[in-house]
Length: 227
Length: 207
Image (cartoon, rainbow over all chains, first blue to last red; front, top):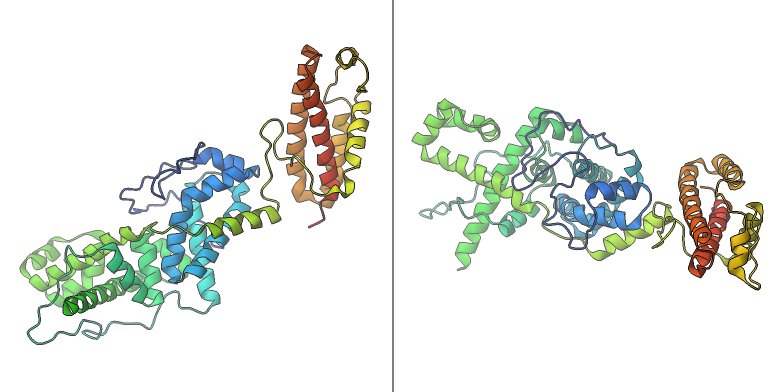
């Protein structure tokens, strides 16, 4: 298991709409606090260390969506994502006694979830980072019919279409895109997690975005043709 | 800067921001500007995928079972000591509970018999100090546990500390109002729970 990188390292995690308040405080990972949560995250952590089942449930409810979404995106399989979510939280709760608050709890949990998923992908010999997939010029660009307009994407990307395109992305590209653009990890962090160079991480991310662009345009062209 | 150079630098531009040279080119080249804008929008739209789905309830159910099996979850009782189950589900040794409770009370210098005027009897009893005698027994239990299952020693120490605190509170209540039957029941219950902890300490199988 990779140890969490120092939370004080210079990172510019994209946290638009998401606020991290430091070690032990709840940072918003799921939309809103569960209505029945009567204790803070910090208190839940301390009580979980003592084996309080309610505290475990509070921590689980606070972070389940983020962890599950990550697992689901990286595996594109609901059953696997559920298993990995369970495993990530189980590992977290086993080690919660060692949490000292040097980093935000969500960061710690999230790192653990990423490691769990990556280990699973490696076990199944699925490519974590694709080194062979390349974009060769117009190879992956949408086929343009003579005289047909090139669909523009600006202002037309919604969650559903992006989700569909992501599912069609090769696993290696998908991992990089999820870690960087969705989850906000920096290239140096990604390189440490998946054991590649920073340059490789940047290169793969660019290819992932280009591939997504192609997929989104193809889907848009297909949708326009059906009307 | 030409289109090839611009598109080679595009990853850096998207991550670190435009340079003066790239800005000039982007403003003069519709294709490059369009490419830059679309990739930027894809990157920004990625946040839409964060924390979207909710896992099925069965994930928590399975997780809770695993946590209990590993002993990471301990039950809490609404009042009084936490982390001690209200009832032990293993009734093979249940007959030891009242005996253990009785022995504890005798060791602490109190004999409580439910005959005649209990309140007066309770009032005449020597006040119990949870530390009298029981601290020695606790240490013996914890030492033995530490040899058998060291990982659980800290948890049992915490349990006993809580129970002893509860016993002291219950004893104070009885002392202040010997006629308080609820306080007497609470004190009896506390002794029983203490006995259960002792029972669990030796009942728990080795990892």
